Image (tube, rainbow, N blue to C red):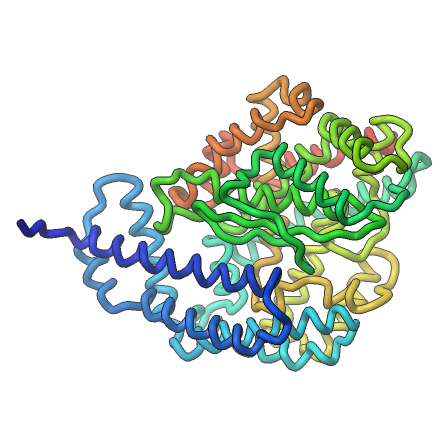
Length: 494
């Protein structure tokens, strides 16, 4: 007996295979940053290029035109799938297959070149590769923008609906209060101690695994590895995380781990019925970052949770300076001069993002030549932070993003912080006893609230709609800035 399938069913069966192949391509990237032999770089570039060619061909398959014209949506899930597939098809059809394949191949090689250049502090070794990546991304943006803003076309990859103008307005609303708060903190008479001691790799990784478990990471569907730049990869039943270790600074490892657990738990928390469909992944990088940042900061750096973390560190490391839980809380949240975005405190983190936002916009527009990037970075950093960059690995070589072509990605970090501030306000109103739970290392009420209100929906709603539904109000910067001023005024006795 033959059963005739509908256009929607045919399209979704095809899409399921495409999503599965996309997961395989992602696994190639995970392997390259964790376990791949150094000598395999060129071969991996060919493999990545071949996978992208297959994926691009599937995403632009001419059958989509007929499927999309004939498909009927019977409910909100079907409507959301059609919205994502139509957007993907329309967008990918504008990009030649040759360009998509070349971007995958070049960025795979560029990532390895960046890692080597970062390790040796050799900017010159990275610049030709970076220029090639930017040239290709500009070419792609020209295909997508069709006469409009190139940078807006790239932003749309990561945060649909956002523009440079809207993000710039967000930064303009945040900068004055952040700068004023930072100034008051740095001038404050009371200054928390910095962490002191030696924290071995094995001990740090043991605590990191405890932290991941405490935040609900599912070890049956994930794993923790070391990488140069911490990241999360995968979705559905396979969401992996990485961290890094600096023996003099255990918080680098611990909070990178919690951050990446936030990303992974978003993917693992999506309704399993959405697996290998367009709804089966985080809806945008801004919403994704809201999960990693609220796990890391509003929960992980809270007074209640840091008290529990101190007890876990005491069990693992006998000798470090923390006279009591209040002092340790101040140490965890200490605002200090530093170069590295991923290690920055909550007050200064967004200032790092603003720097990158302005520089990459200038490179994509052609107003900043790649050869002038290091000087432009160093000048801007000194103006914003008050001291000079000491070496390239603490400056323009510190992030992996530009080497792999992620232009338009950086501003979503601050958008995620803004969303996290809104979610934290709503979550704490719903969970009045949250701090009592966090004080004993129990995050389950918080993570369940986030899973129910944000994570389970995957791509069902538009990005801002997800946050507005969870919070009950339109997202804005007020809750984040109010939270920061209240928290750090208390720590620094302002």
